[in-house]
Image (cartoon, rainbow, N blue to C red; front, side, top):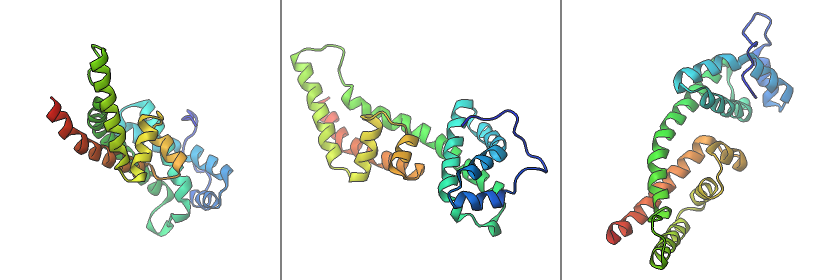
Length: 198
């Protein structure tokens, strides 16, 4: 879904409460109508927080996936449909900002083990790299299954956090937390060896 240029709020727009009720019942046409009616407002908020057009579009899709999954839990007594969706959008944007900073640090510490010493490849060097790769694999086996699964999907399968969440039918925040905790455990397991061998 792209962000339509022409969609805007007007007095003739569909009733959002009714649309969310239909979305909760699995009505895909209602979901399309809800998107067309509300995407400009949500995208504007995401763009203000994230400052990047492409990133805001990606998070916007995450927002609507969450709306689709959680429409049945919407309670109109606790706020308007737009306020509910804006809350989801703000939460997803802040999660993305946090994960972006943490992921850089954690990815560096994780990938460093497998990228170690590639400048001069000889028999001894190859053996050392193989040993590091084996240690990473062994360390992965010590993780809880749910953490190992998402890390392997991300780093060996090349999937984004959003793609993993979709494939596993898990909330994006859950996937990010599992990856973060798993990488922290891997770092704790592997760093002592790295320090001894340096």
